[in-house]
Image (tube, rainbow, N blue to C red; front, side, top):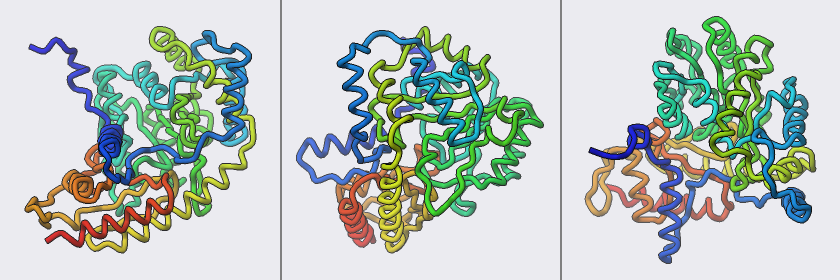
Length: 399
């Protein structure tokens, strides 16, 4: 009999972290690996943000802070939500945590009990269902495909709602697909949430990385009744290239934020003090670099989508935001690798690309979509072009 708890035994490892670790190990062993797995910008944290951290160190701002975050940062988040999203919150409605992942964990721990259902549209970010299960909840997977641009239909959302539905998750722009939900779908979800009295987690971490004048919609801004039922989640990782700084936050009703704060009191306490001062500089300082970054991501997006669609057996939608592509690889199923292995899944395709071409992609199974793989284009144009060439060679070698 295992001495481990059931929650530890049932918790699956992160496939994105696993493929990144495998790619890094191959690199350490001297292989020329092209890594398309990591979900983080390749740009450095802007200098003014780093300078704020250095200044905080110099001024001795290295002690404990309030668990929910320093007042200055919480006020800056309130200002950001008003400026960017037309949302009115007080600092007491905001809690800062150790990354967006920690923020989501706190929400599930505070809000989900045994028997509660959490509707998760797939493809989904890998940690959503695992965190729901860690809170003794039941993930209800709502399957979408590229036929609907990976957005659920209103009919699908209605069919997924039951008396046990506690939360529905919205991640738009999405990891892993880069797809965005249409405004009409978000509006329909808001009406359903009010009608059936469930909550919405709006994971807005990719809010600033949007292309082609696509409209970003923050569901909590659609009215006071949906705002009461919404957890607006964001963070510094993607927009400010601060993945390692570990700063995420949520804005919600005071009762729920207070519960999360109590949980955080007894787990991590405050996020790193120095990172919080850097986060303050991120939100209140120069934002002009975002335009430059998005312009570059846009160029890379077009390179990788064109390249993947030029390979027989692959098909890839143009993402509307974030920095991922999610090509379908089902057209390669039934083909045989040079060493005689039959390809029957996205996992097989990912293994084949890494083994033969040292191209690291993440299989779609970890995102609830077996017939796809995810590639991050948060890397140089030269790496993208080299990767496309290697994938082309790998596919050409199949029989």
